[in-house]
Length: 102
Image (cartoon, rainbow, N blue to C red; front, top):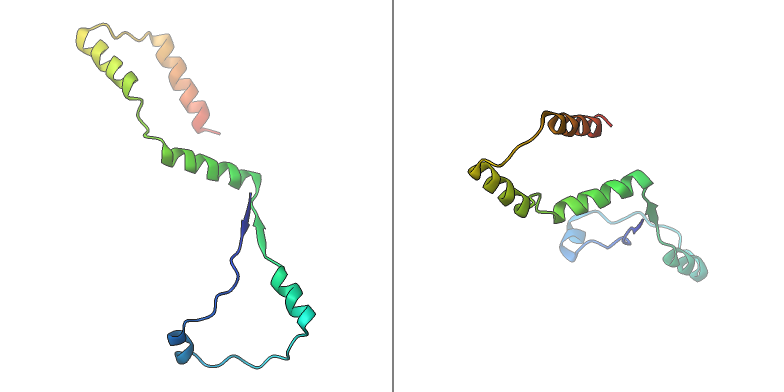
């Protein structure tokens, strides 16, 4: 993933009036100015940062709730048919603990 940095934008007329004038610089030749204008700064993000950005984007787009599963569990609790074996519960807890310790 490469992000482009936008070129410098000059101050507005109001900001320019209140700030001191910049120090004079020697004028560059036309070819130097053209090559400087054509160059653009860029930033390349590491793979870890790209993964983090993708995860954040996916999390922002998710509702976080699987409503059909919630409704099914509520119905099973209400009619007394919801049953979780201790082995299944222990496995689920172990999985969550392994994922959070990474």
